[in-house]
Image: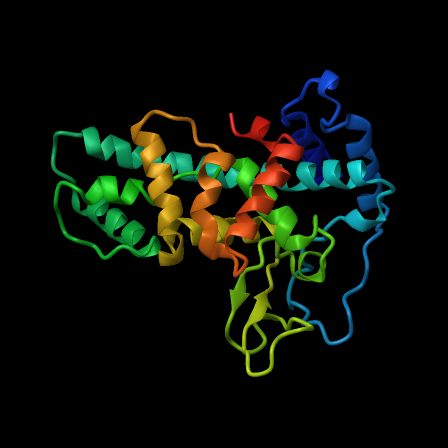
Length: 274
């Protein structure tokens, strides 16, 4: 019951779009999704799927069981948005601390130096041990991901939460891993390939991993450059503004970015960015 109450509390915090615009998160649709979730309508994993050991992993709602496309989308947004916002809030808090050091006049103590070095290592930056650009360079990586972009990518990568990887592995962003048994083997994996689709115990862990990937992997430098430019110019961070920086997220390149933009515009996801 506590889990149900917590989920309902998250729903109360969702932005409420204008009913005149017709494509909002209808409260009734979200309640339908919630009832189906708690009724246990969830498909079993296919034969041969890896099962995590230990505590029971999180149960993902059976989005495919919902009766309409609108209901599936409403439930999908209601499920993922609180997890995206929670990770963005954690990143915002890191930024505040770094910005505080940037404006501080006194030298940093040993504990702060160690914290910075650990943070630089986590975000894929070698610890320079000094330099005027040290903190600004770190801030270019420690930054939020627009919710509209995260939702559009999750919808694309997980087929709106209905894919085997989302339902069984709680992986909503198509993250790969490369050690045997680390995830689910794609049914159409090319011969000679060794990658698997990573397993997560919680969908929130998938969100954390996805955001860290965008903030640290060399392939997504263009994304971070666009975001840093927007920060310098005082422009709000939006999914539509930053999506062109993700050409290397998919082998489909420009077509992939075009799909993300179409999803964001059609579903008015920009309302979640501000």
